[in-house]
Image 1 (cartoon, rainbow, N blue to C red):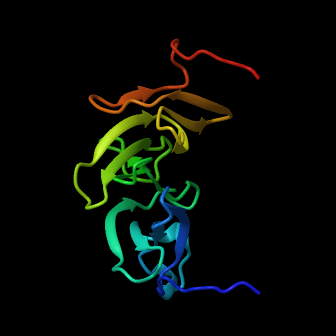
Image 2: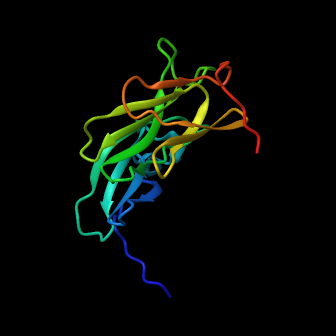
Image 3: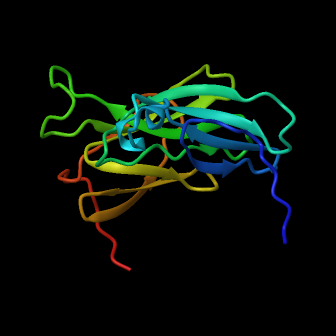
Length: 175
């Protein structure tokens, strides 16, 4: 039987673990303890992105928090950048003047942030996406919107790229 080590014990719900490329650190997403009040992960007030040392010796660091996207939308799935200096994650960008829960969903925005929680950058804004994942070489981003899967070049700096599936600039490749 394999040995199992507890790196972090929490009364809140933890989801979506991800390794750093060097195997030294782990990311997890922690709920805001709604489960202690009888709720489920989809009812959390927020989701916190935490960094843990893989050997369990260091402190747990909260990098940032994301909004609760509701029970019908995906919880963020953070990943480390290739060099381990940043974290990629997605979050909602509410539509100005529209309260949460309205018919038009918020845009999904792909962000990156330094491990100390500074230098948050927007890279891509997606109209109907549930989630977005950066390629291992950090040159592309994959995402699904409505009933289609897409891949596009990943912008690193400057103004974030906005994607709308109805745009004339979308080319379709069928495999």
